[in-house]
Every structure is written in structure tokens, then in C-alpha cells.
Length: 292
Image 1 (cartoon, rainbow, N blue to C red):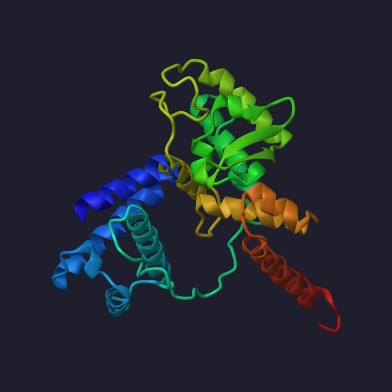
Image 2 (cartoon, rainbow, N blue to C red):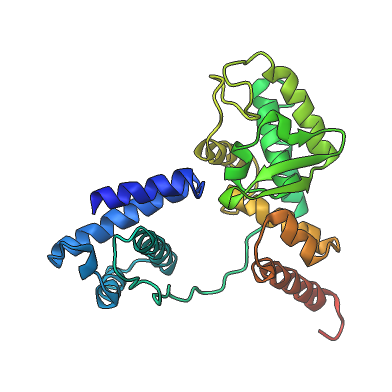
């Protein structure tokens, strides 16, 4: 099964254009499943049936894996077995009716306007590192793009005159997103500093060795500035994406436009932000209405 996992990961990398983070996690999930098959003394792919897959999920539950982790492992198995089935390496697809556990609905975490302002003002206003980090924070907040999309941006993807960014999202799907004037101003200043670094001329965001930043680097940079501010919430780069959507919705932006900017395939995915604004409205009502 080792060779089949390798072929599947290559497919994810070069055909589906999945993020390195997804590929890394799927690899670990499938290797774990492979070890489980060894314990059951299953040596042939065609011995894998729906019962075996259910046993694997039961085993994960006994080991107290979180629902989110189990859900990701189910997604990895479904994609892997579907791939094997298409390549005629398995006679059937026993994962076809496999379902991930239902997740508890959690409202997206986001920053208040003042918290966001403090974070944006944290990096230095000059020098390569300061301007680059300001560009990272401003672009994430101004566009709501994912970290993997941010690190994939090239200089040519930003249209300064039109105020637009061309983003390559999941599955190599492209979308055009507006970007604010403040973010463009910081990016322009950063590019002046960036001219001193020429090793990778296409990439927009570079480290100090002149190489394209990774998603891990972005998260480390964000963690650094969180520690410098008085923001006490647990924040990831994805929280800035939630903040972007929530602030737009609070300002009156329609849900369909937010869906397009975030690159959500389904409007249902975007609708979780309405719950955030409703909770906020309830709190405001209870605090201010004399009859609340």
C-alpha cells in the first residue's frame, strides 16, 4: 500500500493542487490506516470493505480522537479509495457511504475593530521586515484570503490601479478580490524594499533570504505580533479571515458577495457568519433595550 499512498500524494500535489498542509496531514492519516490494516493482517487492497473502515473509526473513537481529526481522516480515506477505484486498483469503493462524525457547531472567532487596529499597527513602519509583516496583516484583513493563497501570490497578481488581487484558491480555481487602499499603500512601500532581494523575483512575499514565505512562516509572524499586542484571544491566521467576513457583514455587505470573496462553493458555508452577527445583535439588545 506504500506505493499507492505515494501515487495518491503525487496526484494531490500535481493534479489537485492541494496545499502542502493538506498533503502532509493526508499522508499521516493514510500511514495510520496502513498500520491499522497490519494489525488486522489485511494484505490486499480488495480486502478493505465497509466493515474494516467502520472498525477503524471505532478504534479512533476508543483512542479519544477529536471529531475534527476523525473527520479529516474520513476525508483522506474517501479521497484515497476513490482514487484507487478510478485507477482500477480496487474493485469497488467501500468508502462511498462512509460518513464523518457530526461536528458541534462553533461560532467563528473574530477580532473586534480595536483589536484588529492594534494588530495592524504592531509591525514597524519601515525596513524590509516591518513593511513585509504589515503587508501580510493588511492583505489578510483587506481581502480575507487563506494563508495558502497569500503565500502563493506573485507580484503580478496585484493590480494597483484597479485595486484588485488575482487569487488562486483550492483546486487551482482563480477569483478576483478587491483590496483596500491602505493595504495597497503598505504593499507599494514593501515592494520598494523588496527590490533589494532578487533570488525569487516572482513571489510577492519573501523571507530575508529571498525565498517565498511558507504558511508556517506566516503563522509564526502572526504569533509574534499577537504577543506584542494586548489581544488575549487565541488567534490564527484563519481568524483574520473570519474577522474580514464578520466586519463586512456588520457593515451591511450582502452574504453572496462575501461568499464570492471568500471563495466558498456553497452559500451555506458563508452563512455561519450570520450567526455571529445575530449573537452580537442579541448582546447589544440585551445591554441597551429598557425592556430586554
